[in-house]
Image (cartoon, rainbow, N blue to C red; front, side):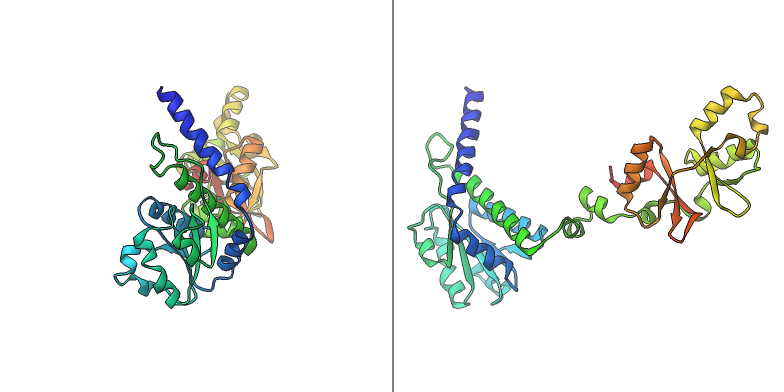
Length: 321
Protein backbone atom coordinates (compact mmCIF):
# COMPACT_ATOMS: atom_id res chain seq x y z
CA UNK A 1 0.00 0.00 0.00
CA UNK A 2 2.73 2.48 0.96
CA UNK A 3 4.83 1.76 -2.12
CA UNK A 4 1.80 1.98 -4.40
CA UNK A 5 0.75 5.29 -2.86
CA UNK A 6 4.20 6.78 -3.29
CA UNK A 7 4.39 5.65 -6.92
CA UNK A 8 0.96 7.11 -7.61
CA UNK A 9 1.96 10.48 -6.15
CA UNK A 10 5.08 10.61 -8.29
CA UNK A 11 3.14 9.61 -11.39
CA UNK A 12 0.49 12.29 -10.84
CA UNK A 13 3.08 14.98 -10.20
CA UNK A 14 5.20 13.91 -13.18
CA UNK A 15 2.15 14.08 -15.44
CA UNK A 16 1.34 17.52 -14.04
CA UNK A 17 4.74 18.77 -15.13
CA UNK A 18 4.50 17.16 -18.56
CA UNK A 19 1.11 18.78 -19.10
CA UNK A 20 2.74 22.19 -18.65
CA UNK A 21 4.59 21.79 -21.94
CA UNK A 22 1.48 22.64 -23.95
CA UNK A 23 0.97 25.73 -21.79
CA UNK A 24 4.23 27.36 -22.89
CA UNK A 25 2.99 30.10 -25.22
CA UNK A 26 3.30 33.78 -26.01
CA UNK A 27 2.48 34.66 -22.40
CA UNK A 28 5.56 32.77 -21.27
CA UNK A 29 7.64 34.56 -23.89
CA UNK A 30 6.25 37.87 -22.67
CA UNK A 31 7.26 36.97 -19.11
CA UNK A 32 10.79 36.15 -20.25
CA UNK A 33 10.98 39.50 -22.04
CA UNK A 34 9.78 41.40 -18.97
CA UNK A 35 12.34 39.72 -16.73
CA UNK A 36 15.30 39.83 -19.10
CA UNK A 37 14.82 43.56 -19.73
CA UNK A 38 14.05 44.41 -16.10
CA UNK A 39 16.26 47.26 -14.89
CA UNK A 40 15.42 46.66 -11.24
CA UNK A 41 14.75 43.46 -9.33
CA UNK A 42 12.32 40.61 -9.85
CA UNK A 43 10.09 40.32 -6.79
CA UNK A 44 8.29 37.06 -6.00
CA UNK A 45 5.26 36.96 -3.76
CA UNK A 46 2.79 34.35 -2.59
CA UNK A 47 1.46 32.96 0.66
CA UNK A 48 1.46 29.51 2.23
CA UNK A 49 2.86 26.80 -0.03
CA UNK A 50 2.95 29.28 -2.91
CA UNK A 51 5.16 31.45 -0.72
CA UNK A 52 7.70 28.68 -0.35
CA UNK A 53 7.67 28.13 -4.11
CA UNK A 54 8.13 31.87 -4.60
CA UNK A 55 11.21 31.82 -2.38
CA UNK A 56 12.74 28.99 -4.37
CA UNK A 57 12.13 30.68 -7.72
CA UNK A 58 13.55 33.94 -6.37
CA UNK A 59 16.65 32.07 -5.26
CA UNK A 60 17.03 30.38 -8.66
CA UNK A 61 16.69 33.67 -10.51
CA UNK A 62 19.21 35.36 -8.23
CA UNK A 63 21.73 32.56 -8.64
CA UNK A 64 21.47 32.76 -12.42
CA UNK A 65 22.13 36.46 -12.76
CA UNK A 66 18.72 38.06 -12.21
CA UNK A 67 18.56 40.08 -8.95
CA UNK A 68 15.49 38.79 -7.15
CA UNK A 69 13.93 38.47 -3.71
CA UNK A 70 10.79 37.25 -1.95
CA UNK A 71 8.20 39.63 -0.50
CA UNK A 72 5.62 38.23 1.91
CA UNK A 73 2.17 39.65 1.03
CA UNK A 74 1.30 40.42 4.65
CA UNK A 75 4.59 42.25 5.16
CA UNK A 76 4.03 44.06 1.89
CA UNK A 77 0.87 45.77 3.06
CA UNK A 78 2.55 46.66 6.35
CA UNK A 79 5.46 48.67 5.00
CA UNK A 80 7.66 46.31 3.00
CA UNK A 81 6.34 47.64 -0.31
CA UNK A 82 8.98 50.27 0.31
CA UNK A 83 11.48 47.65 -0.84
CA UNK A 84 10.08 47.90 -4.37
CA UNK A 85 11.09 50.39 -7.04
CA UNK A 86 9.32 51.46 -10.27
CA UNK A 87 11.87 49.45 -12.28
CA UNK A 88 10.94 46.13 -10.65
CA UNK A 89 8.88 43.27 -12.06
CA UNK A 90 6.63 41.27 -9.74
CA UNK A 91 5.77 37.58 -10.07
CA UNK A 92 2.64 36.71 -8.09
CA UNK A 93 1.90 33.05 -7.39
CA UNK A 94 -1.53 31.75 -6.36
CA UNK A 95 -3.02 28.49 -7.54
CA UNK A 96 -6.61 29.59 -6.93
CA UNK A 97 -6.03 33.15 -8.04
CA UNK A 98 -8.35 34.27 -5.27
CA UNK A 99 -5.98 34.42 -2.29
CA UNK A 100 -7.10 37.44 -0.29
CA UNK A 101 -3.66 38.45 1.01
CA UNK A 102 -2.27 38.39 -2.51
CA UNK A 103 -5.18 40.25 -4.10
CA UNK A 104 -4.77 42.96 -1.50
CA UNK A 105 -1.36 43.73 -2.96
CA UNK A 106 -2.44 44.08 -6.58
CA UNK A 107 -3.95 47.61 -6.45
CA UNK A 108 -0.82 48.82 -4.69
CA UNK A 109 1.45 47.24 -7.29
CA UNK A 110 -0.68 48.76 -10.04
CA UNK A 111 -0.44 52.15 -8.37
CA UNK A 112 3.35 51.82 -8.47
CA UNK A 113 3.03 50.98 -12.19
CA UNK A 114 4.89 47.70 -11.79
CA UNK A 115 4.63 44.94 -14.38
CA UNK A 116 2.93 41.86 -12.93
CA UNK A 117 3.48 38.26 -14.01
CA UNK A 118 0.89 35.87 -12.62
CA UNK A 119 1.40 32.15 -11.98
CA UNK A 120 -2.02 30.62 -11.41
CA UNK A 121 -3.96 27.43 -11.89
CA UNK A 122 -7.16 29.39 -12.55
CA UNK A 123 -7.07 31.43 -15.75
CA UNK A 124 -10.51 32.88 -14.96
CA UNK A 125 -9.59 34.11 -11.49
CA UNK A 126 -9.50 37.66 -10.18
CA UNK A 127 -5.72 37.55 -10.01
CA UNK A 128 -5.44 36.39 -13.61
CA UNK A 129 -7.49 39.38 -14.75
CA UNK A 130 -5.08 41.78 -13.06
CA UNK A 131 -1.77 40.53 -14.44
CA UNK A 132 0.19 41.89 -17.40
CA UNK A 133 0.91 38.34 -18.50
CA UNK A 134 -0.52 35.08 -17.20
CA UNK A 135 1.35 31.79 -16.94
CA UNK A 136 -1.03 28.88 -16.63
CA UNK A 137 0.16 26.35 -14.03
CA UNK A 138 -3.12 24.44 -13.72
CA UNK A 139 -3.10 20.70 -12.97
CA UNK A 140 -5.74 18.02 -13.48
CA UNK A 141 -5.56 16.83 -9.89
CA UNK A 142 -3.64 17.13 -6.67
CA UNK A 143 -1.78 14.01 -5.56
CA UNK A 144 -3.50 13.70 -2.20
CA UNK A 145 -6.48 11.34 -1.69
CA UNK A 146 -8.93 14.22 -1.25
CA UNK A 147 -7.71 16.39 -4.10
CA UNK A 148 -7.00 19.59 -2.22
CA UNK A 149 -3.61 19.33 -0.45
CA UNK A 150 -1.16 21.44 -2.51
CA UNK A 151 1.06 18.83 -4.16
CA UNK A 152 0.82 18.67 -7.93
CA UNK A 153 -0.02 22.37 -8.11
CA UNK A 154 3.06 23.47 -6.17
CA UNK A 155 5.25 21.06 -8.12
CA UNK A 156 3.90 22.51 -11.37
CA UNK A 157 4.54 26.09 -10.23
CA UNK A 158 8.05 25.18 -9.15
CA UNK A 159 8.83 23.49 -12.47
CA UNK A 160 7.41 26.43 -14.42
CA UNK A 161 9.59 28.75 -12.36
CA UNK A 162 12.64 26.71 -13.31
CA UNK A 163 11.63 26.84 -16.97
CA UNK A 164 11.26 30.61 -16.72
CA UNK A 165 14.60 31.08 -14.96
CA UNK A 166 16.52 28.99 -17.48
CA UNK A 167 14.82 30.68 -20.43
CA UNK A 168 15.83 34.06 -18.99
CA UNK A 169 19.35 32.77 -18.35
CA UNK A 170 19.75 31.79 -22.00
CA UNK A 171 18.26 35.01 -23.33
CA UNK A 172 20.61 37.09 -21.18
CA UNK A 173 23.63 35.05 -22.28
CA UNK A 174 24.45 34.03 -18.72
CA UNK A 175 27.43 31.63 -18.77
CA UNK A 176 28.82 29.06 -16.39
CA UNK A 177 31.65 31.46 -15.56
CA UNK A 178 29.04 33.95 -14.36
CA UNK A 179 27.38 31.21 -12.32
CA UNK A 180 30.72 30.39 -10.73
CA UNK A 181 31.21 33.98 -9.61
CA UNK A 182 27.85 33.85 -7.83
CA UNK A 183 28.70 30.45 -6.29
CA UNK A 184 32.32 30.80 -5.13
CA UNK A 185 31.74 28.40 -2.25
CA UNK A 186 30.31 25.62 -4.39
CA UNK A 187 32.22 22.93 -6.23
CA UNK A 188 31.46 24.42 -9.65
CA UNK A 189 32.54 27.86 -8.53
CA UNK A 190 35.82 26.52 -7.21
CA UNK A 191 36.46 24.53 -10.38
CA UNK A 192 35.89 27.57 -12.57
CA UNK A 193 37.54 30.22 -10.41
CA UNK A 194 40.43 28.78 -8.41
CA UNK A 195 43.79 28.86 -10.16
CA UNK A 196 46.96 26.95 -9.50
CA UNK A 197 48.56 30.05 -7.97
CA UNK A 198 45.75 30.16 -5.38
CA UNK A 199 46.61 26.70 -4.05
CA UNK A 200 50.26 26.02 -4.81
CA UNK A 201 53.14 25.90 -2.33
CA UNK A 202 55.72 28.57 -3.09
CA UNK A 203 58.96 30.02 -1.81
CA UNK A 204 60.75 27.97 0.85
CA UNK A 205 57.82 25.51 0.94
CA UNK A 206 58.80 24.13 -2.48
CA UNK A 207 60.96 20.97 -2.20
CA UNK A 208 64.02 21.39 -4.46
CA UNK A 209 67.49 19.84 -4.62
CA UNK A 210 70.45 20.15 -6.98
CA UNK A 211 71.46 17.40 -9.41
CA UNK A 212 74.53 16.46 -7.39
CA UNK A 213 72.74 16.37 -4.02
CA UNK A 214 73.29 13.01 -2.35
CA UNK A 215 70.20 10.99 -1.65
CA UNK A 216 70.62 11.27 2.11
CA UNK A 217 69.99 15.01 1.80
CA UNK A 218 67.28 14.45 -0.80
CA UNK A 219 65.39 12.36 1.75
CA UNK A 220 65.74 15.12 4.33
CA UNK A 221 64.31 17.66 1.86
CA UNK A 222 61.37 15.42 0.96
CA UNK A 223 60.66 14.64 4.60
CA UNK A 224 60.79 18.25 5.75
CA UNK A 225 58.47 19.51 2.96
CA UNK A 226 56.02 16.59 3.39
CA UNK A 227 54.76 16.48 -0.18
CA UNK A 228 56.17 13.12 -1.20
CA UNK A 229 58.18 14.69 -4.00
CA UNK A 230 61.09 16.98 -4.71
CA UNK A 231 62.18 18.77 -7.84
CA UNK A 232 65.71 18.43 -9.13
CA UNK A 233 67.35 21.55 -10.64
CA UNK A 234 70.62 22.16 -12.47
CA UNK A 235 73.16 24.93 -11.93
CA UNK A 236 70.90 27.35 -13.81
CA UNK A 237 68.02 26.47 -11.44
CA UNK A 238 66.09 24.88 -14.29
CA UNK A 239 63.96 21.89 -13.40
CA UNK A 240 65.47 18.77 -14.96
CA UNK A 241 63.70 16.04 -13.00
CA UNK A 242 61.66 14.94 -10.01
CA UNK A 243 62.04 12.34 -7.31
CA UNK A 244 58.90 10.88 -5.80
CA UNK A 245 58.17 8.36 -3.07
CA UNK A 246 57.64 5.87 -5.86
CA UNK A 247 61.08 6.59 -7.30
CA UNK A 248 62.59 5.96 -3.86
CA UNK A 249 60.88 2.57 -3.52
CA UNK A 250 62.05 1.50 -6.96
CA UNK A 251 65.59 2.76 -6.28
CA UNK A 252 65.78 0.78 -3.04
CA UNK A 253 65.27 -2.42 -5.04
CA UNK A 254 68.15 -1.54 -7.39
CA UNK A 255 70.72 0.18 -5.17
CA UNK A 256 72.03 -1.14 -1.85
CA UNK A 257 73.94 2.14 -1.40
CA UNK A 258 71.01 4.41 -2.24
CA UNK A 259 71.88 7.08 0.33
CA UNK A 260 75.21 7.73 -1.39
CA UNK A 261 73.72 8.09 -4.86
CA UNK A 262 73.18 11.52 -6.40
CA UNK A 263 69.77 12.96 -7.23
CA UNK A 264 70.42 12.89 -10.99
CA UNK A 265 70.96 9.11 -10.78
CA UNK A 266 67.55 8.48 -9.22
CA UNK A 267 65.34 11.22 -10.64
CA UNK A 268 62.67 10.85 -13.30
CA UNK A 269 63.37 13.16 -16.21
CA UNK A 270 60.85 15.19 -18.22
CA UNK A 271 58.66 16.10 -15.23
CA UNK A 272 55.09 17.26 -15.76
CA UNK A 273 54.51 20.99 -15.46
CA UNK A 274 51.63 23.40 -15.20
CA UNK A 275 51.41 27.16 -15.51
CA UNK A 276 50.71 29.15 -12.38
CA UNK A 277 47.71 30.88 -14.00
CA UNK A 278 46.04 27.64 -15.14
CA UNK A 279 42.77 26.62 -13.52
CA UNK A 280 43.30 24.28 -10.59
CA UNK A 281 40.90 21.81 -12.18
CA UNK A 282 43.36 21.47 -15.09
CA UNK A 283 46.02 20.43 -12.57
CA UNK A 284 43.64 17.76 -11.32
CA UNK A 285 43.03 16.51 -14.85
CA UNK A 286 46.77 16.26 -15.51
CA UNK A 287 47.32 14.36 -12.28
CA UNK A 288 44.59 11.91 -13.21
CA UNK A 289 45.92 11.52 -16.76
CA UNK A 290 49.49 10.77 -15.68
CA UNK A 291 48.65 9.02 -12.37
CA UNK A 292 50.74 11.44 -10.32
CA UNK A 293 50.04 13.39 -7.14
CA UNK A 294 52.02 16.59 -7.67
CA UNK A 295 52.90 19.07 -10.39
CA UNK A 296 55.64 21.65 -10.39
CA UNK A 297 54.52 25.11 -11.42
CA UNK A 298 56.11 27.57 -13.81
CA UNK A 299 55.37 31.15 -14.67
CA UNK A 300 54.76 32.09 -18.29
CA UNK A 301 57.92 33.43 -19.88
CA UNK A 302 60.06 31.14 -17.73
CA UNK A 303 58.85 27.62 -18.55
CA UNK A 304 61.78 25.87 -16.84
CA UNK A 305 61.96 27.88 -13.61
CA UNK A 306 60.06 26.53 -10.64
CA UNK A 307 57.76 29.01 -8.87
CA UNK A 308 55.71 26.48 -6.93
CA UNK A 309 54.31 23.00 -6.57
CA UNK A 310 50.70 21.86 -6.29
CA UNK A 311 49.70 18.58 -4.68
CA UNK A 312 46.58 16.46 -5.01
CA UNK A 313 45.88 17.05 -1.32
CA UNK A 314 45.69 20.80 -1.99
CA UNK A 315 42.99 20.19 -4.58
CA UNK A 316 41.10 17.89 -2.23
CA UNK A 317 41.20 20.42 0.61
CA UNK A 318 39.97 23.16 -1.71
CA UNK A 319 36.98 21.07 -2.79
CA UNK A 320 38.03 20.87 -6.44
CA UNK A 321 37.46 17.12 -6.56
